[in-house]
Length: 329
Image 1 (cartoon, rainbow, N blue to C red):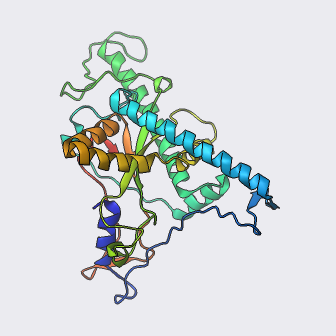
Image 2 (spheres, helix red, strand yellow):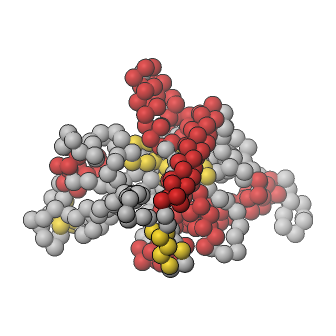
């Protein structure tokens, strides 16, 4: 199964610390629906005022939304096909080289105050995922800017130049030593494309589910591999306002939320596996993910502190190994 199935199975084996006889509470994530009824027309919130719209405007709104969903889906599918064939991200220090999936990885984690995320979310009228992508964009921008400056200084030392212009002898190799890396860019302004392959849960019921619900044959949260992915471009550059990273991420995420490309990747993967076998499906997924810079996936955990075999758990940090990328968030 995928991450949702495995984490649901693991949480079914845990118990609450305050009440060991109870299972942990799994947060619910209801889907946002747009219901059109004859008498109760939709309500639009504009500057803290509720505006009731009539049937004509409702019809126009639905037509506009249909064409937006169709357009964003077509664009994302074309981008996935181009990525599978030839389109690659810019070569940056965090871009994985061929064979990076066989190299050891370093696990690191940081704790962020959830109240701070909620405060930023309310400031931009977005979601927690918008804030996370904004933080990721800002962090990568600062890291790459630091790495480019450091590599530029070492490149000068390589050719016998110091900061004050004097000549000196120095040796420096910018590659790791395996000879597989491509030539990296030298400035942040040269980064044209940096994308994250976001793993998406394609079940009708999003988020973690109780295990008995996933085992039910008629459930909307089926057990197994029900996962698709999207390629989300990340802004890398300098912004005077830190919230600008979050606003740009929100704009991009709002477009991706209306796209059905994640479901199309799941259906196409199952179709390719049925027609051509597992190797062809694996090759399609490998080429799409290897041309992106990093992978992003997150999932809401239990609401209470849990214990496993009478041992309290402080962190649940699921991750994957073997993806053709050097960075997974």
